Image (cartoon, rainbow, N blue to C red; front, side):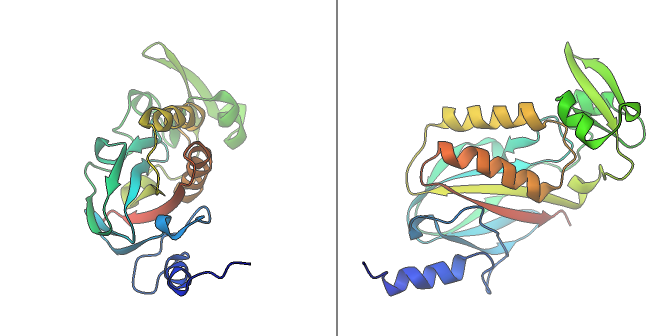
Length: 219
């Protein structure tokens, strides 16, 4: 049996989920190698700092509960190479859920959120609390959820960071993102759980990748 080098064990301890000197960043899968291990020393409403121990390929996705496009590329980028070291990642754009899509504007009654999947809509509300509308030729189900907070996105933002030692075809990532949006668009689910679901969908399509999750305060 091969012995694991001490420096790999040290990195694993530092990045296993909540590093004492950094921001808590749960990891959605165990890395096969330390090349996918990262830390997040600083997080603020406008940016966060990412520490990579080795060169890596990274992708940033914002998860936006209640939005028609629930998974969006952060800063409009897909994957990118990163050298070892610290990297400042800006958090551009606003965080309003209701202003993001025509569907959100159509579902404007108190407590309503838009869904693109009727089966998913029926899992969170009874038929009496669901109405169907047509937005730009596409059917949308407006679900009244008095207990669901449509303001979650205004209080915090949810970011998934995918990290791998190997590059990936961005078309593969885009297909996975589109499939996730088609299934979960409009979902008011908790940001952390939606982030986990997204990571579990994408990482098998990007061999060797690991998903990290950041919950970022808006202010």
